[in-house]
Amino acid sequence: MVKKAWKIEYDLLNSAKPKVNKLPDWGGISNFEKFNQELLKLFWLSFVPGSGAPEHLVVGAVQSVENMGKDVTEAERLLEEGFQALEKNDLVSLGAITSNIFHLLNEAKDIPGHPYRRFKRPLGWEEIAEHFPEDKDISISPDVLRDKIYGGWVGQICGGSMGTFIEGYTHNTLIHAFGDKLGTYLYKPSTINDDITFEIAFLLAYEEFKQNITSKDIALKWVAHIPFGWSAEYVALENLKRGIYPPLSGRIANPYQEWVGAQMRCMVEGLVSPGEPCKAARLAFLDSQISHSGNGIYGGIHSAVLTSLAFIYDEPRSIIKKSLEYIPEGTEFKEVVNTVIRWCEEAGNWEEVLRKVENHFKKYNWVHLYPNTAGVINSLWFGEGNFERSMRIVSSFGYDVDCNAGEVGTVLGITLGRDRIDSKWYKPFNGIIETYVKGFKKIKIAELVERTLNSI
Image 1 (cartoon, rainbow, N blue to C red):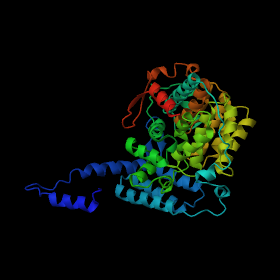
Image 2 (image 1 turned 45 degrees about the vertical axis):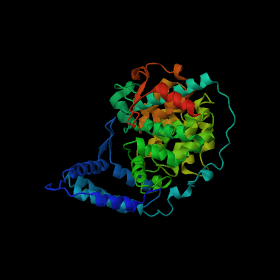
Image 3 (image 1 turned 30 degrees about the vertical axis):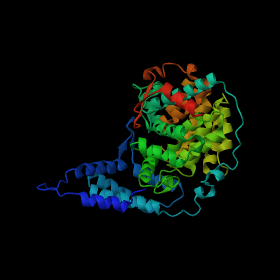
Image 4 (image 1 turned 45 degrees about the horizontal axis):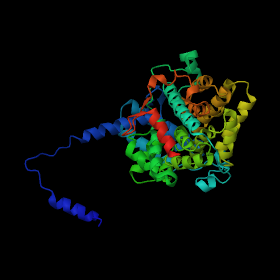
């Protein structure tokens, strides 16, 4: 029999004994105050842990809501006031300003005639997948499958580790700073990043629930194992802790819902769906809507589909073109992908495409989905299946390099298999990756491979 809530509280009250000769102790509250102050300041000026790139997360929120066709004029008026409060360390004022900005973004009205309104934005799986082709039966021998999955994980880990040190900068500044060293490990590589963190959480849920898995199942693994997120994932985790579950966890008070977060982590759905892109897309949808909505979800689906297709197509350009069949018709994301492919087809080299991306997406944050999708497509297209060349391109491209290099590395790792990736890329890890996932601070790459194989 379930014990009633009122009875639990009633028993607690009646069992409580006063503390005789003990003064009130409020000392612990200072720890909470300090944490909240530091978090507030981080929203106004933070530095990416791996690369040290600066970011104004509040400004990015305003920027992104305008990208979605909303009038952010009132919120923009408060930005300068917020920076002045930050400079004075006036956190009392800064807290109120920050709250007001997010309120104004939540209440922002549509801009009449904004281009964003021209596109469809399906949110449910049936509507999203309406025109997706059905999966066909394929046969991959166990040895080949293991090698490709191993290659996929290794490629992702190496690409992410390389990119961690250089994310958040432009092509020009990266070339000026590092020149021909780009496309290699600039420093001692580290596997700690947020991309693989969420993928491990998915794997834990998928091992338990398999095809019956729901977004809620994955979300609860987030809450159990992931201590902290940023941008869209931060908002989602806060929503989840308060019982706001998917899909609302990705939509409510989340100005970052069309950033790169779903794209960066949905390769795992392709790894557990080798040669089954529609299955991969469905799993990525369930994962993506925890923290994203609209085009942000389509980006996660696209990442999973590219990964799944890599098991049956060896040539990156074929994989990219085939992936178009798994993007909802009439969406802005589909137009973006089509446009980038056209630029690649017309260009003589990847730098030409880069300059078009920089100009076309100059109003978008460097963590937004669109320029980073362009970076992935451009690197795969002109890398032509060569791991070294592709890493050079993706690291030189700029934007969210670790996410993009991790995705490019996954796709190429699958097409090549582990043994065709130069061992210089993965030897530094000694077969071990480190994370900040609770219970999985260290995990063998071989174990990750076996857990993935056992989930198929």
